[in-house]
Amino acid sequence: MSALAQAVARIERRTPAHRDRAIDGLRALALLAVPTGHWLLGGFTRDGDGALHNASPLSAFAGFAPVSWILQMLGIFFLVGGYASVLSFKRHEGSTGQWLRGRIARLGRPVLGVTAVWAALIPVLYALGVPHDTLRTGSTLVIQPLWFVGVYVAVTALTPYCLRAARRLGGWAAVPLLGSVAVVDFLRYGPYADAMPSWLSLLNLLPGWLFAYQLGVCWAEKRIGGRAGWLLFAGGSVLFAALLVVFHYPASMVGVPGAARTNSHPPSLLVLALAAAQSGAAILLRDKIANFLAKPALWAPVVVVNLSAMTILCWHQTAMLAAAVPASFTGRVLPGLTSAPDTVAWIGERLAWMPVFAVLLVVIARYARGFEAPWAKATKARRAAAGLLSAGFAVFALGLA
Image 1: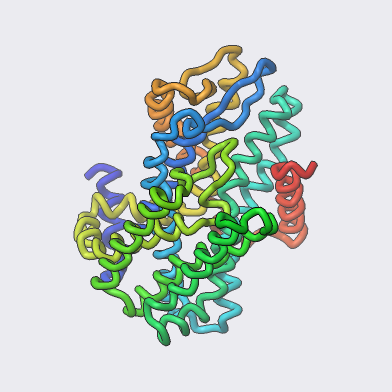
Image 2: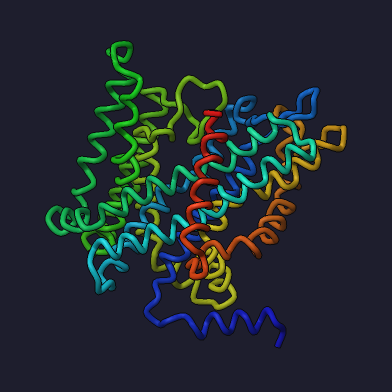
């Protein structure tokens, strides 16, 4: 038996019979959509000094926007997050505070790791001749996905309240969150938009992402099932189409450089419509997904991805930069890597680079996964140093220094 076959067999033996493979499969799918989306929909331009700047094929090809509908799977991520949090919360024997601190630590260690490493790398890379603009571009790309962790911590802290709402209201507990986002969208995009303050959109941040999380809590509590799945899928799809066609929401689910409006930062009603449709599909396909992942060879990759979830989230942009930054020193533009994403050919060229990014991510993850484990040997001084480095990196990445 080959080493790979032995690893697959070992994973299968160690998987408890009660493990919900469908939930893990959905989480892995949503997680892999993050690097796929960023690698495919994010490109670079190279200026005369050799510095890299962010660019997107969506700026040149608006018709490419439907790809973002598939790759924007944060609704699924929050759905299964709510489901898994309920199971974890019920298993935990200590206080709610202890449970929450454990969840925060699991999320926070990898974030501190990647930001501290980048903070230490920036002066080294600058000394090696990497332009300041390239460092700023890279730092921005690295820190952008990490907003998710802060939001996820916030909704996780609300798990006990989501449970109470689910038990009292069932699936209807998510409706007020949808209504809240709809009201804010009306105010910021409706006839009184000019009179509204610029910070108004931030009111959508928590209810916008809590919506799918609440659905996941209801799902775990068995308060929604097949009928609700059809309602979510059909209702979400109809609302999504109406917002695009009738109310002229931007078609892209990710930010487009230079665009006046964006759907995801913070989430608009279009994001919730997509999340509802995706959640409905997930609920309806649960049994089929579980049967599909009953095969050990298909289940093993799901386990590996889930065990490396935060490493993939935190380091996938670094993997792309590990290819692009050295390429910027070659003195020529490399198609699909440092060339402007403004031609149809670029899409095929970028697809050819994506296996390279994946290999680089695997190599990086081999060492970065250590940040996910408890820092048993880390002294208070080392933890404080990591915190200071992370804060310094955030200041630089956000353009505050």
